[in-house]
Length: 103
Image (cartoon, rainbow, N blue to C red; front, side, top):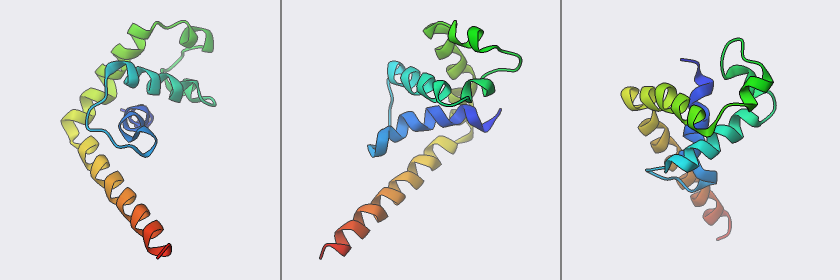
């Protein structure tokens, strides 16, 4: 599986710096579509898909793709949980450094 599919799912957990342990399907879908709508990321969505075909996909089709690819494999690999730990460590050091410089 291409790494690009994992990014919108990981972004949904990252939530602009407010790390979550669970993400509702509607927010997964929002992050998923935002990611592939940005720049030309839609080209990595599927081999041979046109922009019109991509834009014509329903939310149900997008969510099905997210569930059968990155969500399934992230659960099986444990990468998702390791990512969350790394993000938490990063945020801790970011907050610590900001606090320390203001003393």
